Each structure stands twice: as structure tokens, then as C-alpha cells.
Image 1 (cartoon, rainbow over the protein chains, first blue to last red):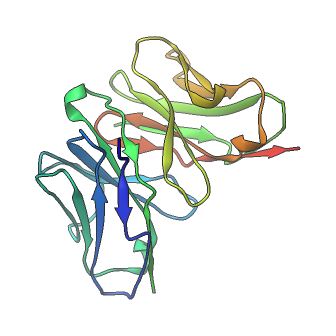
Image 2 (image 1 turned 60 degrees about the vertical axis):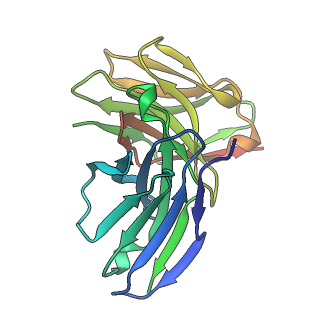
Length: 115
Length: 110
């Protein structure tokens, strides 16, 4: 069984640029959630995709957007990067059909540095 | 709204000593509660999950947590710390979206 994978592992961008982060969900999972973990803090929920549609969003501006593809992989896009966007971005997959409180399995993350 | 508060950003114990990491939750509905562990430069690994089936939840690596509704607590314990337990531990609450605490870094002294 393949776990959650993310690419790239590290990324350096400059303020104002755009970035796309990718996530492949665990086999059999249909739900992908994205989290931002700033240095020294706990992860914060950005949004979740279930069967290719956004299914919940945290307190993040619209310049954070996403996609989920038919194979349940996902992308996180961030436009107009700001210095405060520097963080570890974590993707988690789960199986919505298993009921509420489904277990989310996390990938290793993408570390983004905005200069 | 759902949230968790972790008491103590850093905890230090000796190898072989009891580990106790504290977490209090706030939830307007019966909560699903989680403990995750994060090793340096890695993602999050699920230690255990509470789903109302039993108040004492056993997880991996010898960890367990007890759900106490009267105290709105979900503290994580391990009877005997091992050097490999040194990591950051996150308590979390939620259903489809998970809301994490600020984390507790566990240091294990030889």
C-alpha cells in the first residue's frame, strides 16, 4: 500500500510569485486535506477536497486555492506569495466513506520558503 | 467551534520515567480526538484516536490516552519513556477538518 506522497520536498520562491504543491493520496482514499504549519506552531487547516469538490475551508484567503483530480491526487496553489506563507505544507488523505472522524494520513510535507 | 489547548510547550523526562502530555478540548459536539507525533523534518504520524467507543484509548509505541468528559481532557501517557520518544506531540480535535494544538516538545534525558 502506497502512502501519501508530496512534491516537491523543498521550494524557494520570491514574494509575489505563484506556487503549486502536489499531493498523491493513499490508495483507496477519496478525500484530501491541506494544512499549513508555520515554524514552531501546530498545523492549521486550509481546505479539504472530497470527490473533486471543495468540502470545507479554514481561515485562509482566496489566493490559496486547490484542485482534486479524478485519481484523487490534489494540488495546492498559492498566488501572490507573501513572506508569511513560508511554512511546511502538509497534505493528508482519508476515506470519507468510512464515516465521520475518519483517520487522516499525512504526507512528509513540502517546505516552502518565501524570500 | 472546536479547539484544543496543550499545556506545556516543552516537557522533559528521564528515560524510563512516566510521560504525561496534557490536552484539553473544547467542542460543542461529541468530539473525535487525536494525538499525532512529529519527528524532526517529517510529517505527522497518528498515535491514537478517540471515537467514543472506549474512554481509554491505546495507541502505538506504548502510548495511551484517557477521555474525561467531566474535565474536557484527553491527556497522553506512557509508563516508561524511551529515547526514541523524543519528538513533538500534537493533540487535535475534529471530524473532516482537524484542529491542532500548538504542540508539546518531549525531551528524554538519558
